[in-house]
Image (tube, rainbow, N blue to C red):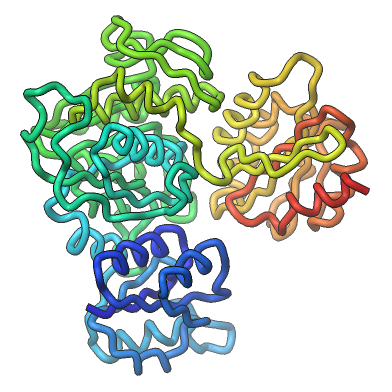
Length: 474
């Protein structure tokens, strides 16, 4: 079929486009400010991109319009629609679906879906799980909200039939012929016409519930509202399925207490099905207290240790022995924009990381701190860019999130709340700037040889990484 995707440059919709193209469909799409890296990935696949949402695109006459959640019924100040193409689609009565619904009907149906949900760590854990299954010979399909460096692409269909190998126990081989598909399962809403969480569409047989905190204040009123959506996901897992649940999270305990019909495997807590013994970069994996594997890798941070345990527990459900899964993680390369080293100038290293929620900022800074010798400084550079952070819902948590940093630098452009006031308790350890160039000058003035500059944002951050490296060189 010919599908035309509205909002094609988002990580999810771009991945969907790549899957549709691989499956043999004709794919076109549009977005505002068509931008890399997704635009480059799509053009390399031969997918035509159109700038903007003009209703002249109705002339394309696709078989179906696939609507990204960037699209709304919003009006501009002059009263005209912000998305005239969407208005024309509605007026014409032509067929349209959300991205998650199209994915379910055309890709996920007939597959064993492994879904990774949680407030934090979804992209990293989805990438870990896809890599473990790949190394075990299971050739999984996947859709990740980032680019796993082991694969170099954000999505692929995978083998049409599950390979009958994998270092699995003999009694498990060939039991389930369904091919595997690993998907990052986002709790954000599906589309302007479907306000359920995206993950409700995925119908997983294996689901990781990694953690659960309040986030997305633009669409959820409170934590209980998100817990309800997580329970909608739990309701879709069959009795033969497996829920892999973080035993440290009270919120997830409440989710399961609303009803659970599947096998549950816990991880993280002292008394769990899967736990770790040792430092996050080198640890024994324990299954119900007995050693079953060892992970030694380049990643750091307790959060990544937990991500690894969740991955191992999920992979076991499709026949990969914990020992095999743990060994596969040794050459896991993480995802772009997850503690990605962007360069070193005059003994000062600049990192790029996607952290934007206070808890993610804290765990990212803590993970870097654990790698450094005593006395080496961390300069945390961040922008509150997500919808939740822009609303100021979590501004009071920022000093807590930055405790392990020696100095903090905040880009406060576009905020409706006072960043200086929010960071006041940090005293002279925190600086605020209204624009990127000022922020760069502040950081460069403070930096000295041996410093680690950690830039955190869920956006492009105005190209600050290259600007810092350039300024530090002069």
